[in-house]
Length: 141
Image 1 (cartoon, rainbow, N blue to C red):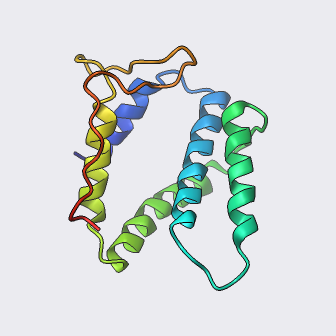
Image 2: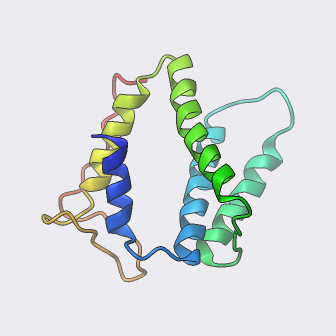
């Protein structure tokens, strides 16, 4: 799998991009940052950061908050840098990040139907269909 496959998954999941789909995806992205922070312990008092990011993520996903892109070029640069630095964090933790991304991507595709298109639940969220398989991350961390 490649990053192109991840982008295709998103194009199929949400073919019509809108302000709402952007906000929801940004909320999902922040939710993953919170999950990462929950796996770490810091010496300082950073517990409020997780709480605040969780609130923002939830509000973005529910429509209670809207993000406005002020600089598209800098946003794109930041997103690309986040991908690169995420791989670096995994590498420096002795993890096989690229293999893990492949496993998660394969798992995400398993949510789709036999023709490679998303199955939605009654709330419009992509459902785990009958072919769903959890990512296997054993021996990668």
